[in-house]
Image (cartoon, rainbow, N blue to C red):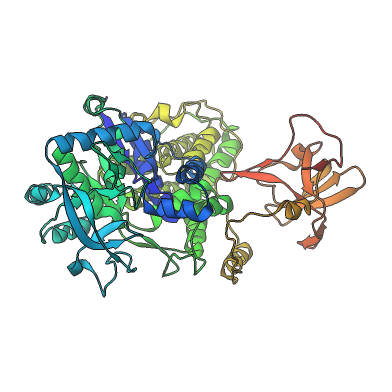
Length: 638
């Protein structure tokens, strides 16, 4: 079995995760999931960078220790990756002992080899970037990266002899076109290396910055945050000897944002060369996301939080949109309007409709059982050939991390299958005995094409594809099927019983879309406290009560609303809940639920609703809040 190792950058814990963090991590997850399907032993690493001056200052402002501060913040990333269905093998924190041990070991080895030396240094220091600059680097007297003010610092420090590896690095980049991708980023690094490469200051005096890993050969200093952080990609494997024995170095893909390309392509590569290891096979620097044409900024209130997106639109929709909308490597512009358009056109109308119509026709014509393919015509061969073409092309495109091209190619099979159904016309075939024999083949091929699509799309939309397979009646997990199940057409077993058709991706209708967009465009109130926290007094204003559903029926002309009669002990309330796509009305009768009892009544589709049900959105599937034991009615929930 071949090994495959992919990493995200480790994210700096100075703020909540935003759409850029999610973008890189989802992309890495898709590549890792595909390689597992393709028979590889995969190691997928992500984590958090927790040292440095910004962390120390933030902790000081909050009157907590730096360790307390990072212990709280790193959890946000972990929780988000669980929510976004990220399949990472491990999560590294640079404050962990396993990481600090190898950092110290490498520092000592380099010092013993005279790759690190002590010298005095005078330069311009940018605190936000935690980086020294020379006079000629400054732009109008400010940091060339973040354009903020710098301060003049003169002190003794330790330096890594990075400059001696400049010629080697240039030769490496020029001789290996896949080392840095895309090509435009490769050219940027070569442009950076046209100037003399200076040695790298890799320490900070403890008197100025105590929060970091102490140098093993001089306790008066801590390690520069970038020298420490980059080592995470190998410290995850243990000791220096363990790295070589793991079979997971060099990494196949080291994914980064374009803003940290230099640190990875130059600092990290030369560090590895100095300690006797090969650099990653590929460093891929993707672009940034703007929002409606503007850079994300707290002051503009346009920072896109993936948690909120996932709650509103579903995890798989977000995973699909981010990798479909923009070629991986280029900058992209995020808008909710574009997201809704992709959801409705690609997912609901094309893929979702294909599954829904196939399952419903299977139920109508064959009692829900996959029929035996009885004939083969030109249309059938064309569909099979298209499927094989798509499978072959998808395999190649993963080597380039060309995610949006992969999805474009897969959608060619979605469109071809829809056209196949339209052209063969199952509804016409069902009218004659001769046609019914042909119908068996048409319905089998439609279902088999969906199975192929389920495997191909699984890395992008795992939960949705699992649901797709369940509806097809396939018991084997997609991981068990793997890419080898696509080697030959006909993996779907005849006689399999399909399940009831369910909407994978409910459409967002025009009125609902207009409401969502209007709410997003509404002016945001600015407050000093942006933590989202409320006081206990504010929470106690919400009156949560237990209740039992006595009656339930779908609201006519509404896909989502169910009209409920809920007994809360003292009275029966009429409540409208948007849960029709997750529950059958008759299945709700007798359920004990939690309602907001003091919510102001509101009219929905002309019907008054006198409260609200509590539910959790589990990747598009709603779960009603409840209890382990049956409580009484009207009990207050605290």
